[in-house]
Amino acid sequence: MPLPFTVDSLEGIDESLHSHYVEEDGKFRLNVEGYEEPTGLKKALQSERDNAKQLKRQLSEMQGKLAEIDGVDLEAVKKLLDRAHKDQEAQMIAEGRIDEVLNKRTENLRRDFEKQLELEKERAQKASEFAERFRERVLADAIRKAAIDAGVHAHAQEDVIYRASSMFRLDEDGNPVALDSDGSVIIGRDGESPLSPSEWLESIKENTPHWYPQAQGAGPTGDRGNNAGKKWSDFSETERAQLARDNPKAFEQLLKTRGG
Image 1 (tube, rainbow, N blue to C red):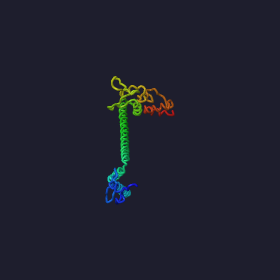
Image 2: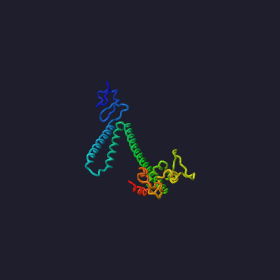
Image 3: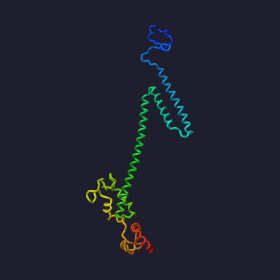
Image 4: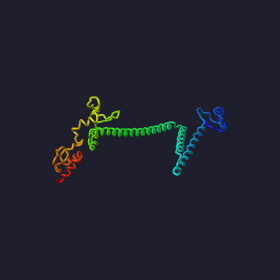
């Protein structure tokens, strides 16, 4: 016959077994090795559950009021949420679910880290884009200045900048430096310094006459007499467009021959 765990009295229990019972709160409990009084743990667990229920009720009430109240104290809401989270963890620990608590904390830390990492990447990307735009502007201004100093026509400066941007880069000091297809620095006339935009413009001047204003001549089109006596019909559309860009005054003279 199995022995009862608790009895109100030792009557009915074989006298040789009385020593295996201990008296607690007016009753007798079988003295089992490894037994722990559950009352304290049960009370603690119930207390945590009661606290969690109370906090959930408070949160529900607050959420219902958020739409009605202006100027809500967000800091107080945050503290309440933090407390609810801590009490939930305490309840899980009391239930022996420590691994779940640790996994949950690890997951929260991972999410926070990834969020911060994405923000830092976004800031770095914006900073890089801003720096690149700034470098492009500084380089364009340096090329434009060299073009103006070389006498390049105003309408051709953007073309100069476009062509130069594929060849020139800014060095660490912000100076334009010419690079070849391998990325090596191209040396200028002095054999030491990098090729400057001014030297580059001079080196290709013969191949880019359309970048420079035409000299005024004696002919009706103002081109040193090469087109003297020619009329509108003697020019192709391309030649007329180029003349309009390079020598507006000569183009005005040519317009007078239109229809002649």
